[in-house]
Length: 102
Image 1 (cartoon, rainbow, N blue to C red):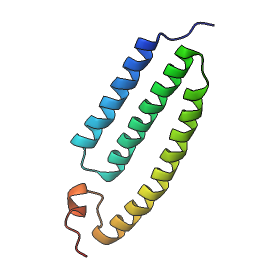
Image 2 (image 1 turned 30 degrees about the vertical axis):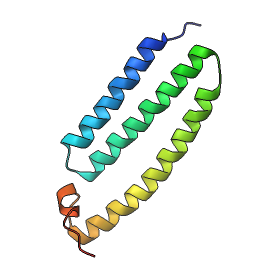
Image 3 (image 1 turned 135 degrees about the horizontal axis):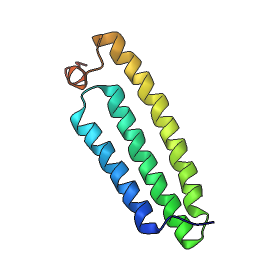
Image 4 (image 1 turned 45 degrees about the horizontal axis):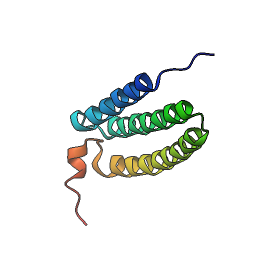
């Protein structure tokens, strides 16, 4: 079985992370922002798995499971907040959420 070289795996993780950052900066829709955060979480998980496979340790896979659980919690809280924002402002534009009052 052949493995992916560490440099190529980390390069792919860096490209995915950069795409997530660009998605957060460029998009104004909150659903796309949450999707970009998920891409960044997956890029970090990929880096853990690649590093763990390079050194022959299962620690990277265990950390990836932790990253997945954090991402699942982020999705549940994020979607609940999106539902509340949609009900209140009738839009999912990030600029509309900045005008909230207490």
